[in-house]
Image (cartoon, rainbow, N blue to C red):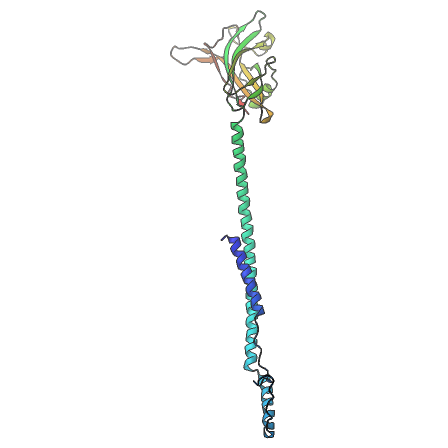
Length: 311
């Protein structure tokens, strides 16, 4: 039996017991007029000679009433017992009522904790199911080359592979890219990189639907004009100029079970590998304007200050 049911049962039992005790008949003292004769019979005519004895008996009963007869004492004892029983029953009822309220309050707290735990579990399950049934776009970027064009602008080309590794189609996937140039010893924070990525322009009218496990690969390019890259060029003592390019990209997309725009961001630093001593790891330096830069002599890796994340 549950605690609440047991306490309620005990309360009801005590109330009925108190009610029963209150209804119990208290023994009535025998009247001094009760002679023990049968109803409807007439007492025998007492002889005249016992008149004085009768008067003496009445006086004796009057004295007994004043002093207290055994019958009256017995009735008073029952009255006291009944009052004590009723008071005890009332105290028990109050105590059990308090216990019932306490257990009810405690049970409410336990129920609230259980409800909160159930809600958290349901939310976690919902998030897990949503993560399994959503689109996740992964962007793989590979550096191809850079070279000067006849107008002395600098073109950088990249190979991009977009793949949906989630469980739902990614609609209206759009890639936006750009290459920024850092000054000597300059470091961009994550917040600064996110702001630059958000401001990037789209690559043409490129919007596609990406189905799960169906990668799309293509080439893109960024062009830096001469005034633009010379404003950030690092002067070297031999009369050459070096650059510190960082590739930035962002993919925007939707999927059916979400109303907001989701993004995948990438940020890569570009450096040139220089072999100083055979058999030793190459040095990483800023590429020099006018020198050839390709996958064989370049180092292309995620930018360490941020800019590589997805939501």
